[in-house]
Structures are given as structure tokens and as C-alpha cells.
Length: 455
Image 1 (cartoon, rainbow, N blue to C red):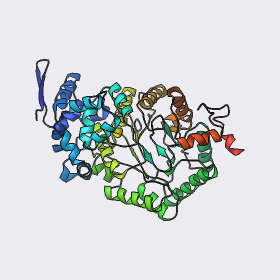
Image 2 (image 1 turned 45 degrees about the horizontal axis):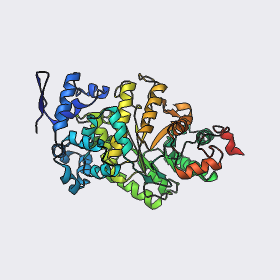
Image 3 (image 1 turned 135 degrees about the vertical axis):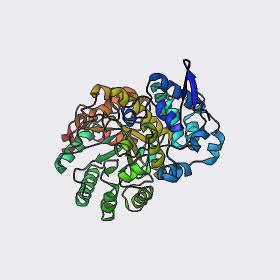
């Protein structure tokens, strides 16, 4: 295993694979803040050269956090398909990249290869790819999942409808839901972040969302994004939950900061399958985001892209229906500007798909970041071309409860019409029945008017 290279007459020597991985990463303010980023463009290129020539076996034998110290590492390593891994372990990272991008390699070929990859391998090949590589490779991979409906089929683009309200006012939440539906959003999930995440409040929100879904016979799934333990207790007390949600991390210490473990997530999944209201079998919803582990001092000196890949390696064990990175939510301390957010969004989508997940993205930013709505429209267009399973939408792109900017309800349908994509089939049929879209898939004249549901 060679951890050095000569570039422009200068020798670059790296102490460990973790150092190579961190310095091969595209510039991220979080890595700079952690003191692990490349100090120059030349050093970054040198690290990429070294990384390109490492074998997949080198990465398997040197996980980002030691097996004995970290549950996430153990889950990733123990779930590997050993026969597939044995057939590819002598490939270099650059050979893996070439195989994924090869014309003759199908999406099914990539899905098979992915079963023999650890998250460190997924992260490594991502670091060698350009943005266009990430779009091309992501588009090649289709990952489907079924809760009440099936997400991720070729030619579809779905949306989470996010009707958050600053005081959990039920009338305000319902108004936001109806407005989103009137623009064609909500086929992935109607997912509410509650202000009040006490048990009684969460139970009430589950019942309210289910009431709206049943009243209008909406073919979708509902989720209340409280802590997993609160949702579990709500389900035990009769709350109608289609999905159980939880934020997850790429290290055991990060998951501990979230108040979770692999055992707890496994228990939640079993409870949802046993007592939840969805058809299944995919009943979990996970959120991630580059920089989460650094914010809780749980990064172990590992770069944020590699930790993000490890989130996906952890999450896929529980066969989720939805996974999304909240790409610009944490702030400029981790992703400084629109360039870094766009890069991270494309990275996360590709890594999620390569890990075998039905991957979505919350295309978003905070108001103290060097980014604006135009940047988010650029990223959402790139992701839609990359085959993203779903995007998140909020009223006018402004989440007044979480105080950040995302996509608006109307933008999901704009992307569908621009790129000739459709919502989930049952939801598309429902939209036609409600006269939101016409037979060609375009919005009708009354689309966007929530009063159409009050007739």
C-alpha cells in the first residue's frame, strides 16, 4: 500500500488512508474547520493520485473508524457480500470508477457491485469523480422501494410535501398540505417537522395527517419527524404511522448524540412492520447531511464526505423507503457556499444510490450562507437529470418553522415538465382525478389553488 506520490517534482507523503481520503476531498469548509483538508490544490491532486491507486482491499482493511471501536463500522463490514467483494477486492479505486462509468456497465451491474463495497469504497470513488461523472453515474442506478406506493421507478420524480408551521397550528398545516397537493407535491411523503415533539402532540399530528390522507383518498404516506422513541411510543398508543423517521450519523458516537443505536433502529423497524399503517415492506425514513458528525464532535478526524457515505452504509441495513441528505441545512461552517452545496448534493445522491438506497435530497441553504434560490434551482435541475428519487418542497421554498430555504411546491412540477418526468403512478392518476394535471401531465388552470379540495 503506497501512500506517497511525486507531483511537479515534489514528494507528497501521507500518514494514513484517512489522511489521503480527507485531502482528496473537494474543498469543504467543514474539513477546513476540522484541520484535515488539503492545504493546496496541488496537495489535493496528489492525494487523489494516491487514492486512485489504492485497492478496494486496502480500504476494506482500513475502515475510517476501527471495527472494535464503532458500531457503524461493524454494521457496514458485517453486511458485505463476501463473494462479490472477493471478486473485486483487487480493483483499484480508479478501476472501480472506470467500471461504473463504462458504457457497457448497466445499472444492474452497478447494483451488484455495490453489494461488495464498504462505505469507504463508495466515498473513495466519489472523490475521483467530476460533477458530470456523478450525474452520469447516478442516472445509471435505479433504486426502488415500496411503502404504500413505489418510489424510484424510471422516469419518475417524486416530492416530499413539508407543511411545517411555526406553532403547529393544525389549520395552517392542513392549508399548506392542500396547497402543496394542488401543485402536484406529496407523492413521496407528507412529512411534518413538529415544533412540539411531546408524545401527545406527535400522536395528534399523526392522526391529523392520516385524516387528511383518508379524506381525500391520497395515495401517499405520512410521517411526523419527531425522535424515533417518541414515534414508537405514539404507535404503541394507536397513532397511525406509515413511516418511522430518524436522523442518522456515520459514527457510533454521532448516533449516540442523536439518541439512537443500531439496535433501537432495528426495534423501530420491527414495530412499524408489526403495528404501523403502511403496506410496506419499506417503513423507515432517514435524514443525513455532511457535517453532522463534526457538529457533535463525533467525526474521529474523518472527512465529512466519508462520514456521509457511512450514514448510507448504516441506513441501508434497515431497508428504508426514503433517505435524504439535507444538503445545505447545517450552514456555512460545513458547506461554505453554493459551489460546495452543489458538489455535496451531487456527491450525496450518487453515494446513496451506489449504497443501494432510494435517495432524495433536500436542496436547501441557510440565510447566512453564500447561496441563493437560483443556486438551488441549478442543483435541483442537475439532480433531476441524475435520477434523484425525490426532492423536498415547502411553501414558496421558505420553511418558516426551521428557518431555512428549500424548493417551492411549484418547482417540482416545473422539473417534471421540463425533463419529461412523472410522479408516482397512483399519485399521478389521483392528480388527474382532482384536476390538478391534465392528460399530458401539465398543470391545469386551477392548479395551485387549494380551494379546489374544498368543493
